[in-house]
Length: 378
Image (tube, rainbow, N blue to C red; front, side):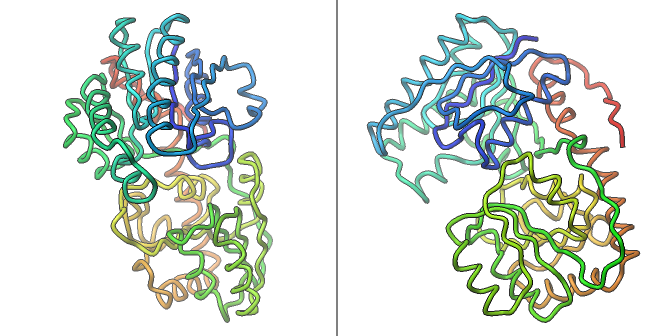
């Protein structure tokens, strides 16, 4: 199929480093590997495309205005213009990453008479109102309802997101958690060491809990590898020095560098502190699993569904530094358990979480096709 892929969210630089950027790139790759021909219509390119996506057709319509009503109105205008571009180019299916003030997929589907997918990663109206600026909430809610109600299927990354989408009137929904490219991430053999490496990947923001990871690591025979940067970066570096920890902070890196960095690790961590926002489907955890790493994670949000405690990792109460320390200590002392959990993690990533499976399930749901198994090498 020719697929028009729409991303009208100015906060998602499609060829950038953010998790949302990686999500867009991986879905484009998965669609191509399944034999489809995606074209990208976006509000923000964000950089040069990876080499394997350099030939994807791209139409960019930048959004103007720093914030508030002007930016919101221009987002709606950009969505309309990108929809017209997709209609002019022609497509067999339209796939949109849900964005505030956009009804682009609904317009394309209605005009071109093609099925549509609306990918919903978060309840954006509530997020925008709580954390940023939302001038025209009524307009955002109206566009959201119109988009959800028109979609052939709304693909939701978690159960709570699906519940929210249904509350907005979405008649057809499925839950598809995020995925991972199991060809890019692979287990690595490690020589025995008395100081295993514990890895964290992500933007260094308060809700990622890296401060608790540092506290938990104090006094343990380990090395920490912190991949990424963000507003908490300087404070975390100071805390690591204060605690006399052996930590490598890589700073921000390109997504293509993550597999090689995870190949240096023995264990991976997702130490979320917990809270009200439990709808996330964290890309890092899927990447940890595909890299064959046992995962020590907080039992919050969707993580208790994603991880099997004692099989693919260890779940601890969110925000509990002592429980986190105990889980790390247990895995440090038991190389056999690390190997066993790592092998189970890799097998589960291949079996359940390959991006091709995610993309195929989304497209099948929209077109009414019967799901058929994919052969993915382990």
